[in-house]
Length: 612
Image (cartoon, rainbow, N blue to C red; front, side, top):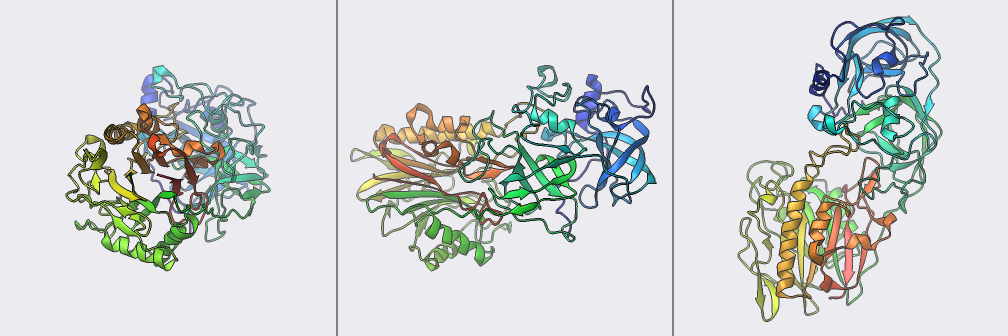
């Protein structure tokens, strides 16, 4: 079968380019010519990200076909073998046909058409644009020609700085800035857009995904994790050596290799450099190297000791009874084997009893019974559970799925303090009873009417007892990063609008923890879940504000701080934070999913152990 197409294409010049035309960054429309003869590819590409000829017709542009794509965005790449000697101007360009092209790799062609700037994902995505020729007329002059020699992308050629700062006069965009390929990685990649490039033997930093793509790094020493990834440790640590790899051959002709993080793509991988919505600059391989597996194993944390309380968080990725039993068994096995059967597990993304069927169902008891039965079958304890069913379609996520947080707890080790009355819209409060903090509703939701939780999961608070000591646990699933611009955005730095809601959510949780500590200064409070943000982010800082909490993952060595892999960046999304009353603790990010092509969830669980 072909690759899974993930994008549609607009029919005309994008709004971004229309704006650039009005701002004088691009030339006016009309037939294009060059002062010294026919228009060539480097005239089309120009020395900035936007073509100086966008919107104009060009005729008989010469080039050698370096790659043909017959699926998804159909078309082919041409490259002019007569380079102009300017590092900033690419000699390659994509010709969008919309139907399976009739040309072959190695054909010498002349192409007439319209120069277009196509923005994958649309102008509002913030993505950079792809310069291309559309509505083409193609003349094949000869076949079987040698291809232009590939440009090697390597640790030596990719600059250490990622991108220039955007132009304030253009809203922070870099589109109008002259390319400096010796200074910035994004400028280098843009200067090679559409050209025949290659990478040599490179380490895999993003496992093969369902769309037949993986990520490598050409910089083997750049922010390495202990298990072979590339760690994203700050907003200035974008990992310049990352590059997405796809293949031009349809999967029906050549299966795409399966690779985990830390594996090695050996030999030479060569093909045109594309730009797409789901990863930015992508080597679309005409010839693909061989994956050498390094045998990455799923981690196992140590069991908690008799006097230690173990609390974990695990995003189980839209689990519902309609999922295959194999998914339930694999997730259950991870709880028992890899997490060593924690005393308390805060689950995220438990769906209702009929999953994405949008019929008003909100109960999730069938989902939870199937999961807890699978844990017993895997040799684990018979967990009990507590949760609060959400209002229908009020908490975001997959429509009809009604994802929510759930507490699992082992009643042989820990007890739950039930305080009735907590519903989807009823807030739980903090009171003082017998000189100690207590919740008015357990389980209960934190401030569910707060606008911070609009179309997002409300935190679930619960009161537990372990060896006579009360422990408060708050299970969270903060708003996603949907709507944020990618690292390859034409805005530099990229816009992160989703962060605003998460900061407000963090402030609400922080306020709740402070109320507990005001009632009982040394209370043991654990805030766990899919925070959907980094350990260095404003969201985490808002959770920690005033010393109310500490992000447990920061106790790990930097090379072990991650729970998710996105576009080749190993990063933190899942967290457990602890109040000062907890004192000493042992923290572990248990890597069982994010680094692997075969995943049971896209998140790695976290676990913390301490003595209350």
